[in-house]
Image (cartoon, rainbow over all chains, first blue to last red; front, side, top):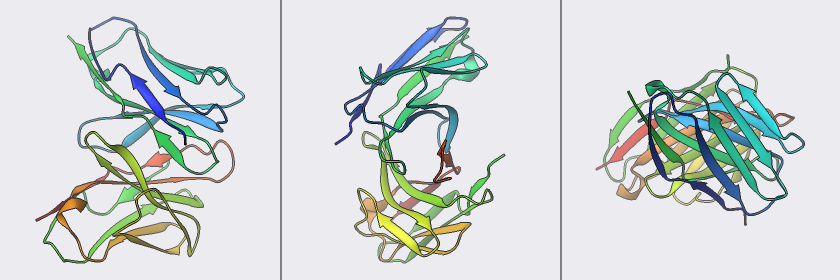
Length: 111
Length: 113
C-alpha cells in the first residue's frame, strides 16, 4: 500500500529565504505526482504536476523535482513571501485514478 | 480555468438528518472524487466516479453514498448523519487521460450536532 510522507511537518522562515519541502513515497510505481497548496479553510489549489517520465517542473518561483527510483520529490520555493504561507501537500497517483496524499507541510513566511 | 463548485461552504445538521453535498465541474471531466479531510488524518477518499452512473468505493465509504446522474454533477449523500461525520468535504475532478491533473473545489465544512 502506497504511503506518502512529508517532511518537515511545519516550517517557519523569514521573508526572502529559499526553501525546500520534501515528499517521499514507498511505492515507486507511480503515474504522476502533484503538489498542492491549501489556505486555511479552503480547498486545494494545484501547483505543479510531474509525470513519472519527467524529472522536474517549474512554475514561476516554484520548482518541483521527482526521483522515482528513490521515491522522493522536492518542492523548491525561491525568494519566499508572506503570501506563500499555507499548507503544502504532495499527492501520488499510482493507478491512474486515485491519489494518495501526504499529511502536508505547514509553511509560515515571516515578514 | 477549471471550475469545481461545491454548493455549500458551511452546513450545520443534526444527528440522523439526511445530508446532500453537491459538486459541479465545468470542464467535462469524466473523473470526479469526494474526499474528507480531518486534522491528523489528512485527505481520505470516500468515493469516486469515472463516468455517469458509475461509482467506485474509496478508502472510507461507510456511511456515505453517491449519485452521478449527469457528467458535470457528483453528489455525496449522508443517509443518516452522525457526529463522526463532522469534517471538511472536498470534491475534485480530472480527465482520465494524461496528465490527469486533479482540480478541487473550495470545500464544504459540515458540522453534525
